[in-house]
Image (cartoon, rainbow, N blue to C red; front, side, top):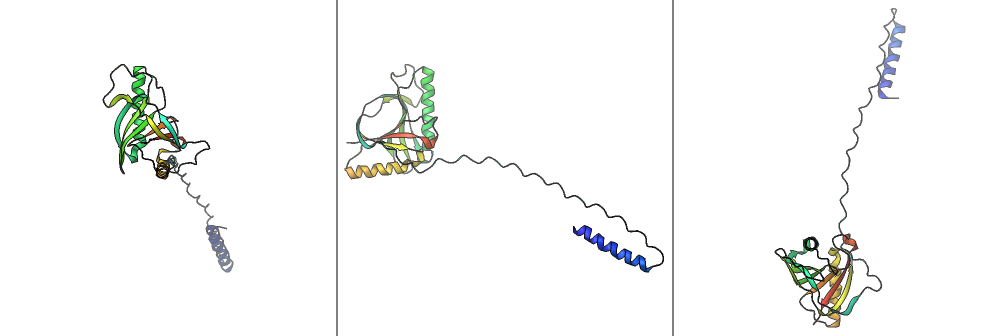
Length: 218
């Protein structure tokens, strides 16, 4: 029973008792008003979609058969490359942008890539790095290339091959393991290293990247 209905019942009982005690009949009480319906509730506002999860910073476990410190010999390849520098915070985005520019120019000139894209790191420090982002080609483009783009050769010679699986942000753990491996074998690396992307960095989800890392040694 609502408070509104209970109060009306008390008033009605009191009015009947007074009427019995008086000679003239008391006027009938006014009819109870219907309870006011509660206001309609406003539907909750639609929630914005959840943001996409950030790439993982933990490298997945290597698969059986993945190379780790495998001795190989790199063969020089003709590449069309973009030379530049970047901060580590925006490294992957910078490299992807460079590969997009190269692919667009190759398509424009009717030149097909002959291998997987690669990044040649020529200098690094705590905040950033200098690089050549290149795409192998069987024949160099005949036409002129845009400013900042050139034809060159990829590194050659003795190197150690490693494999990274996972996001670019998770590569710190891979390079830490590489550094430890070089120390254990007392090997001295040349002043560069190479990443070859076994999965296309332009179309592959970042957590699903497979990257071959080559460390040329002296």
